[in-house]
Amino acid sequence: MLAMPQTPRSRRLSVAIAIAAGIIGVLLRLYYVTHAQVFQPLDLPNARADAVDYYRYAWNLAHHGVFASDLPGAATLHPDSFRDPGYPLFLAIGLHATASYDYWYAGILIAQALLGGIAIALAGLAFAGRMPNPWLAGALLLAAVWPHSIAMCSYVLSENVVAFLVVLGILALRWAPRSKSAWRLIIPGIVFGAAGLTNSVLLPVAPCIAVFLVWRRCVPWRAAVLLLAASLALPTLWWVRNATLESGATSSQRAVINLVQGSWPTYHAAYQLAMKGDPVGKQTSDAIDAEIATFQQGMAPGLSNLATRMAHMPMRMAAWYASKPALLWGWDIRIGQGDIYVYPTRNSPFKNLPAWRVIESLCVALNPLLMLLTLGGVVLVLARSPDIEQVGTGITLLIVTLVYAVLQSEPRYSVPFRTLEMLLAASAAAAVVNWASERRRASQHNQRADLPS
Image (cartoon, one colour):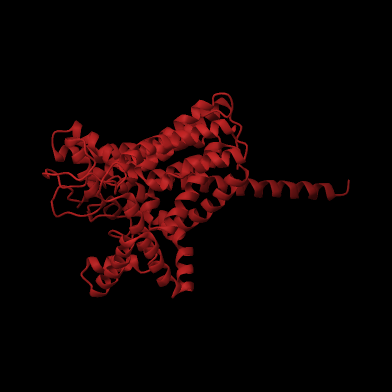
């Protein structure tokens, strides 16, 4: 990867680019959340969906100090660990700070818009000097205008906080020195631990970064141990709490649900059909639910039943799992309204304003190229880069892709990592252009050397 020697002027320009991109990101997100109208009734008793769960956990946390998904105002609360606690805690803080549901809801959307823009600026600071400034500016501008990332701010979903925490962890990795002050690796460890408590898919990230950094001799092993221990500190407290629960839905049950759903190539189509009342979609959804239910008899019977079904169509299953990384980083939201929309949305600027429609069209066209460049970027940083923030970025994207390829894979889950995707893609593109330029200069030099004197 390119490590650019920076002059003071170049460093100031990098910082200015990061701040400017963050401001653009904030302004676009604020405009979107104040104009788009999203139908996600979180406070209705008959409402269902991830956002509803998050709201109920937050309400019970704010009013009773109990992490439970029971209806607000329920006579008895049943603590559980089905959802990760990080995002409900964020929502509960908002509930404490506001006087009504309407104020809380508006405040959460504005806070998420601010976090989204700040995350872009932090990512720019983390990658400043790792590529030429024009490439840095291009990647950050693309992150600022990316439609999925903008639309996500209008939903009460954990992806908004995950995006901020992951980028903060990457920046903290860069800030941490590589030698005597190894204690500073505690900070990125704690941040990655908080990210893992917001989305458990990220729990393996910091341990894998620690092992890889020692293997590549980027940091002393004692520093890697500090990173590992710090990343597990907060999750360990959560696991101890969960061990005291006598009953209730667990994160393991959620993982089983995602594992089974993700093993059905027809799951997304069946979900869409079932939502429309189609009998074929309902039949497939019932079959998936029945397979999930077999895991209640034990992990061994559940896995045996799942393996038996998959063994009847080995080639199709192999092709399905091979396609899931591309599905994760694809465009259309599958469990939702399609395109960039998770929940029904009216008055979206991406539908109503010509300039926004042009931006979305350009992003749709660029998305396949970004996937390919990011793959190259991951390979390059893991093979060659000595910079721990770039290594951390590559490992983060690799683990996220692999875990979601095994479990449930769809574009919504990649949204928190889009800024990192664009930065690695830009790094790869800059490296390719630099390599081509060096080859051209070498060729021209050889041609001049061959000329008769």
